[in-house]
Length: 255
Image (cartoon, rainbow, N blue to C red):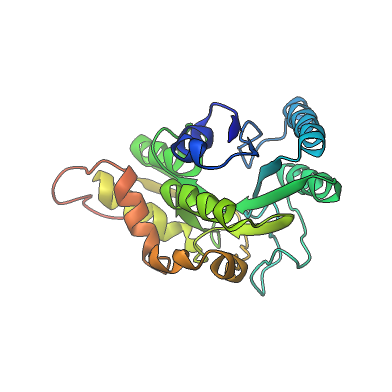
């Protein structure tokens, strides 16, 4: 496996790098959902096109990481599916979806993996858990009522990528998430409890979240049934990657 990139996800994927030949992992792209830099988008587009050309010539499989966030799934009502309509709500989502279409229209073999909010050691500070934990530590958290986040442990992501590649799955798109989106308020409450800090909550305008369907993932990787995905899964993920605070936790949770 040739891993292109040196960031958070690339670092964790090195654990399976020796297990899959003829696979190229594009793990050097834009990873911030709030990203709007056209220069960064252009760099990722150029990289993906270069890797597609390589894979078309060599017969290698390209693994491209997209997003299952509201950047892609932005119409609530029914969970977002890989073969259903998408309505990208952000510049980041439109960029990722455009690259998905380029990958899917190429002659190369590929896996497009739409990721939930991945959590793990050595994350950059702009990603969800480090950013929320920093807000809590600062004493003030910005809340968007209605926002929900589907958290998934990076260790489970690596296991899923490993299983998908071992199965021979190709020329397909797969949601890689827990399938359970948690209200942001519950996530912040658990972070506060874990850190032993009660932050002030500042409310912004309401937002909406579309759930993520993982039926295809469960079909392709039956072992996900043993990963503990469900309504309480996020608590274990947060506990694994947040240091415990003072005994007794915060005095109160801001309303």
